[in-house]
Image 1 (cartoon, rainbow, N blue to C red):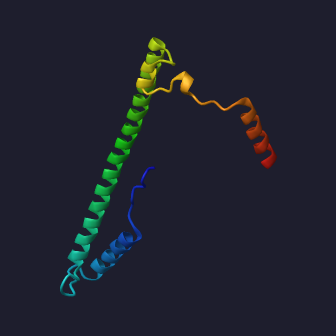
Image 2: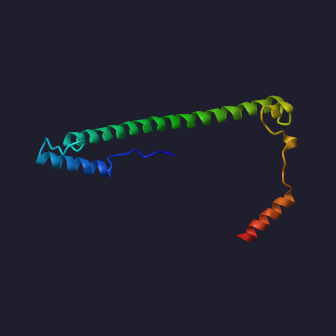
Image 3: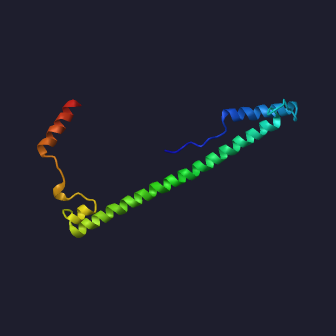
Length: 127
């Protein structure tokens, strides 16, 4: 699952447009407290910086996720090859094969032909 990168939000775009309009009226507009044009511009800059940091972090995470998936595939392939090597060396019905994580041939549970035919007939009738 890849997270979507954020772009300029509606609120950020609206604030930028509003700041430009307020600056056209009076570049030093200040209504007291935190309600000033300079504070509005600072808040806009902070949000833009946080969005950039967020997107950079997502890129790094996506890269790491891809690397992990590739490593998992390589590890799974190597593990399967090692099990095949044990089967080749000792046989797939040996205790060594079982010790390596395989299921010995004699321990495999196989459904009988009659049970498979009944299951197939029941599935075809239900369809």
